[in-house]
Length: 232
Image 1 (cartoon, one colour):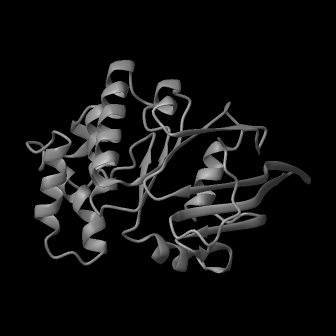
Image 2 (spheres, helix red, strand yellow):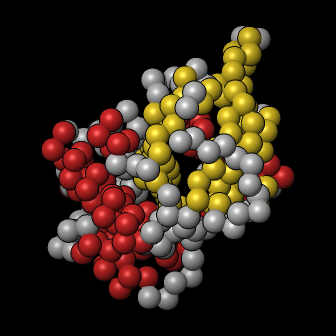
């Protein structure tokens, strides 16, 4: 069931979008990327956003996470109206409470595996960052690869590092954009299993953009975007 956003009195709601729209103008012609999108995600909930390429999935994910601003409508993250915040203020609102996983891993090549995972903890001022990061790398099966650079790892291993980095601050919500998109079937399946094991143990809310029907089916709700509009 698709429950639309209408319940600001619910303290369990982490992110809430109301009638969100986003446009792009090219050569003087304006096109709607998203139109009148309303949704919300509660604590511990798992949601898959599915649809064809170009339907607006990744754009919606970026707006929900406060990485971009809508042209119309409103988005609240942890009860804060993101539309009225600057980019720096939105970053502060996310700090330590929001995790990200991307299709292309987004690891820093000049940092070791351990340093990549430690980075969010260092930014948060965590004094025990090294020990915490090692613990998470052990959870994803890479406790013996701490000093290697990401370029020396396989795609699946790099995504395991990305998962450890995403969960290391134990965020309230994780946004994942095609987390299995660059992986073969067996590796992708292993990442799906690991992602949901970590999510279940952490009780982190999860919003995933995916073309992977198997991944989407693991979520409690599947929301279909067609031409920028939610149709279910």
